[in-house]
Length: 261
Image 1: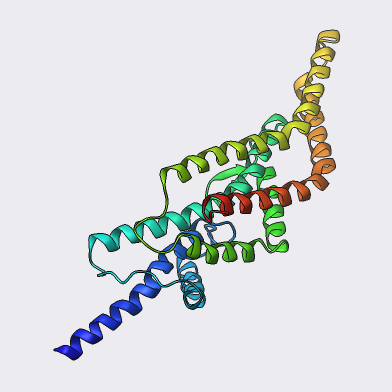
Image 2: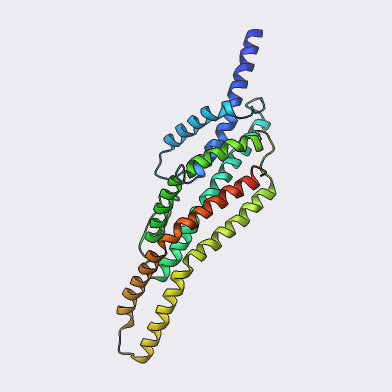
């Protein structure tokens, strides 16, 4: 009986050491960009989360040894999921800058009807937003954003050790404020195109008043579409510094809120 008790205790310790970090890592993998896209099978995400867990557990502080089927264990599980999801959502918000900006531009240039399914969010977005998503995803990988995300995840186990405590109400409120800043950044991205298209619409309105015989509906759509594409092409070089600055801001936000930096 003593041997059985010792063996059960060792198994409980071993499982606790890997189980709690796994839920935090799985939450991040499910919510983060690139890792958590819809077209990646759940089995692949599960294996990826398990692989990161095996690599990180020897490098992080050990978690508490608690009976697996207890209320405390359930609270720890929820806390770890919430922390992982929150970190992933903060980084994922960066991509929403370009989704919102692309939607605003596409709607004003008459391209809002052309939509495709976004593999990252699983919803229909304009093709312009999809173009921005592909572009920013490549930049995210080129800037080693995926490695930065794993590094931040590793540091989070030191700043916020596994336990019943973790996410607080103040952290959630700061995330809401961060979401507001992200939305405003998306509007700023679309401002040059909005200004150009506004001038085009004003000019078309003047033409319609001066020469009512012109069919503005037939000539207005190609003009706004052409001007919109020209503005998007001209503004493409500005996307790289904008995305780089946003990625640095996201990592700084995570360090300040989650890592206590």
